[in-house]
Image 1: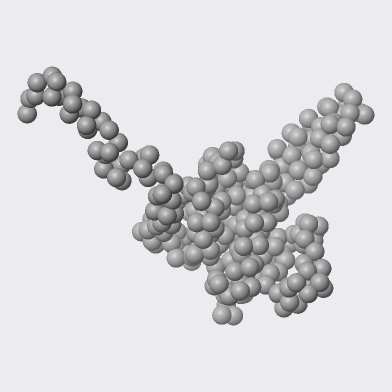
Image 2: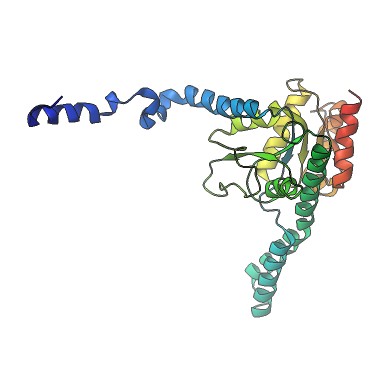
Length: 283
């Protein structure tokens, strides 16, 4: 229906206002403080519904640090550190660069071993006709150990999934995740819930604050019987003993001796997979 210019101008003003937008199409409304409960619910429901649609029944969750790099990256950092030392052997910054480069290069083995673990699990899934439904590798979707897990599954010719999160840095998903199975989150709490919902095992490779957060959340839930009984595996006793003295916690009486049995250590990709299979075979 045609309107005179003045009427049309008023109508345009009315329909352009945010009040006239359908609620679910109003980004400002959806993003408001009052709608946080709705956003939390949607963030829980969307991945859950999509994973259900894909027939994903169980996952093997891999945690680990973003800074655990492939060997090539460690070698690059080492070359930079050596160049800095050669330029000024007494420079504190150069010395610190060398210390960090040495540790990054040393830890590159964890990247390769996580990659191998992803391959082992995925090849098993393919051989047993459950690729895409059972034991799917699930990571946090970023670089480092997360990339290694997805990469191992990709190189085996199978599927893997990932739960990425919006951060000021490192928020880009790695390129080895199966398209359609990469999910993005805003809330850490909902993301951690999704890590556990279908998990048949949790493997913690070396990592930093984020890995520790995920590990202790899982240990607390298992300790209090608030999650399914699954193996929680700390990969590399050398690393974990270096940053956490679990025995001290028991000796201090702040945890029970039996709580030391909530987790176990492994040292190789095959041993890790064997532990998981043995755990579920005995159930």
